[in-house]
Length: 265
Ligand SMILES: Nc1ncnc2c1ncn2[C@@H]1O[C@H](COP(=O)(O)OP(=O)(O)OP(=O)(O)O)[C@@H](O)[C@H]1O
View 1: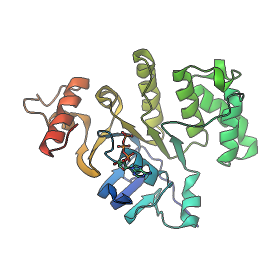
View 2: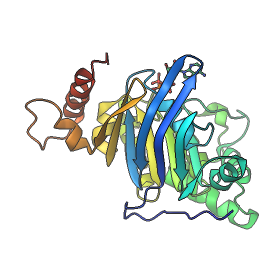
View 3: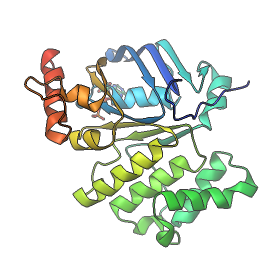
View 4: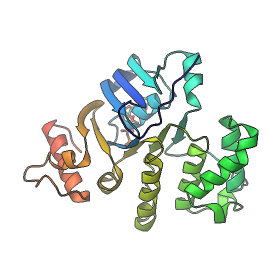
């Protein structure tokens, strides 16, 4: 099967498209007919606990398929094992919690990810160097994973997610647990990633959204209730001047969307 990979920064061709996606866990409707497009750049998925953010990321990562609706990735519909296999190597994922062998060094951890994602052997060392450089962990390449701080661990998690230069990078709450200084550094890293891939990041943190997002989707109780830029989200709040873009303005816009839909934040 041939797959067209769209990595242009023009942003016209979606890297991923979700149409009418419904996912049920027994009696819980986690996603109820969600439509969304994801383009090169950074997209934030915003919503309260249980809104369906992780479930939507699991559709994009091909970890699951919707009960109803369709997902297209990199120009090809995802349905059935063959199409999942074809696109999976073009997707990088940083889950909320990721597993690692604590005695592996950072370099070994990323080399292992490169092998898993089938980066050809002659290119592997170069790609590992590139990933370490991107997350600024070169100095710590020989440190064991079990000895990293929380912030370094997240950086190593990003490095393993991008070692195969994926067109689509999925980050599930990447800044949770980081201190304010680490969060600022991390936002710069996410922005850099968005320059070469479509990055989709779930978050609760308005400040992250204000700083790094080209586009925002607000999910509430499994439904997509807002899609637009950060400034457009801010403008949802009454009295917004149409220009201010910071954490409190994003928070106010988000709360206005929540209130309009009668959901508790
Ligand atoms: N494996 C599962 N079995 C049953 N219900 C589930 C399962 N996974 C998620 N759910 C339910 O589906 C809904 C959406 O969950 P999901 O984890 O996608 O939300 P979320 O927005 O990522 O939440 P959080 O911000 O807390 O991570 C919730 O009601 C959740 O309880």
